[in-house]
Image (cartoon, rainbow, N blue to C red; front, side, top):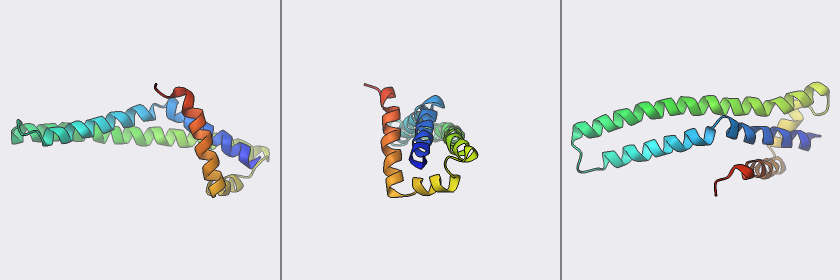
Length: 124
């Protein structure tokens, strides 16, 4: 049941990534950073315009960091639900599931399960 609980937690985490929009926020933050870097390297802009672009990007990236942290915490909380439920039902102890998750077989199990859970949502 430890492996089954690990699979449930991993799938919950992967679905949380989708449900909370974590990838979209991360992608937008990356685009903001790239645009800011492009502005800083643009020889056509004067120093004031570069500074404004950097300041604007800084504010957006600060907000994006907060959004990423909150959404990632939501994903972690969602993944803890199957583990807590299994522990409460006496099916698998929390410590045993965590120990398995930190082992190589557990990491590989999580990698495969998470990838398969997100596969239907990939863009073509």
